[in-house]
Image (tube, rainbow, N blue to C red; front, top):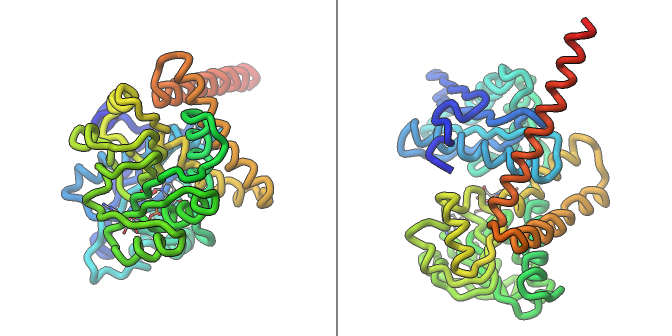
Length: 355
Ligand SMILES: NC(=O)c1ccc[n+]([C@@H]2O[C@H](COP(=O)([O-])OP(=O)(O)OC[C@H]3O[C@@H](n4cnc5c(N)ncnc54)[C@H](O)[C@@H]3O)[C@@H](O)[C@H]2O)c1
């Protein structure tokens, strides 16, 4: 992906800059595409070096949400918002409530959820504005972890032609909500877990609980493992790290794992199987949808398990076509969106003819 998408600032269907000096709010809502439904994507609240970086991030992440929601077969488009980290003195509740008003103004085109730096409580407060929000009662992280685990099993089955994880070394970067749950799930299946976290005690706690070991955050990239699961920061694969990666398979929970799409080719050339982040980490959005349409847990689990089948299918097609899994996945979504637009245009024409 180029800096702000191929069409620059006009890469998004709608881009909203929000400002309220009274509550200390500066935020960006990027609605990438609503062909399949309202743009679903989290609210991120982190520090950015400047406003431009915040806009670029919102646009990049919103485009990835379009790919994620469409690939998962969900009736949502893609969107994302970022709030520039406020001063510590700011009244958080007032800020979130005001941000909720900006969300409301999108008229339902943006459906927000939690992301890095926001909580279910933040979303609940934003929702008091009258805007529909997701994640205001439940954290989707355990479901995201379940989907990443399904993706890992499928990738291992494809690469190693085996159905188990016995003795497989899995390196998890980030022992937070997703990383910790993933470590427990995979360890229960016999995987050897290696965990890294900038919060050393968190990493130690998770490693101890699953009978694994820790590695320093600075050593993650060169650490030998079978499967690398980035569960912390974006752009872990970059020109600076590509040659140092010491794994055979990458299955990310973290969004925006590649600093540039061309790295998908370079990983393939190195013999590393890369499962696109937006395929592997869709468990959270599948959970959001399940809550909205009131699916029960059995249905939700079955839908998340399908991530495994999707990964298998993607890797099979990539292997037979000689394309990267990323190219195959992006091409599928482009085709899906083109077909949906065609159907929409036909309906629109019919409506016009009947009025
Ligand atoms: N939570 C979800 O449902 C969900 C869904 C889709 C994608 N994701 C993505 O997955 C990633 C993890 O999400 P989470 O909810 O577990 O976040 P989290 O904040 O709970 O956990 C992230 C962990 O990574 C650690 N960390 C930060 N920088 C690090 C570094 N450089 N090296 C090692 N550890 C580092 C943090 O200390 C923290 O423990 C994020 O990138 C998020 O955007 C999460």
